[in-house]
Each structure stands twice: as structure tokens, then as C-alpha cells.
Length: 78
Image 1 (cartoon, rainbow, N blue to C red):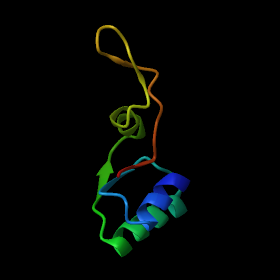
Image 2 (image 1 turned 45 degrees about the vertical axis):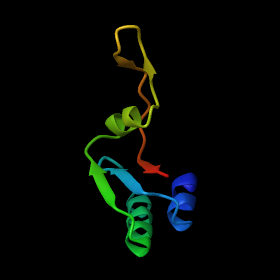
Image 3 (image 1 turned 135 degrees about the vertical axis):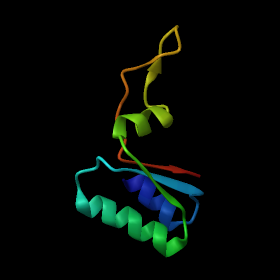
Image 4 (image 1 turned 180 degrees about the vertical axis):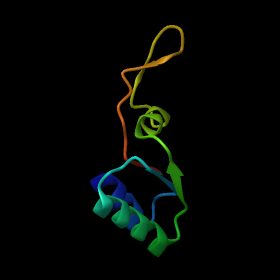
């Protein structure tokens, strides 16, 4: 959250992804508010594990299948 908030506040983020499965309302409210304030597009992703895989928070086995995927509540592309 700290790194995402820094990127959003500094207007370095091009797009932000927020997992719908995030259970902390204050977390969601902060990210949504920063995106709206700075005009950064916010996209909702249904699952945090899927978002973690998109961000590369996993290992890829020799068959190209993602293993040990770590969930992510929010990701920014800078």
C-alpha cells in the first residue's frame, strides 16, 4: 500500500489495479480517492491471486504454469 500510495500521489502511475476481494474498506477508499484526485485510471480485478500473477508475484514452472502465486490487493504501473 505504501508504494502504491507514493506512486499515485506523485502522479507517476499510468494505471492502477485494485482487487475487488480486498476486505479493508479504508484501503479501497484511499486508493480510489487518490486515483480520482489525480485522474489516474482505476481498474477492478475480481481476484487478488490473479492480480498477483499479473504483477509477477509467482514462480513459473518449466511447463509455463504459475505456481506459488502471492495475492496483491493493489498494483500500479509506472
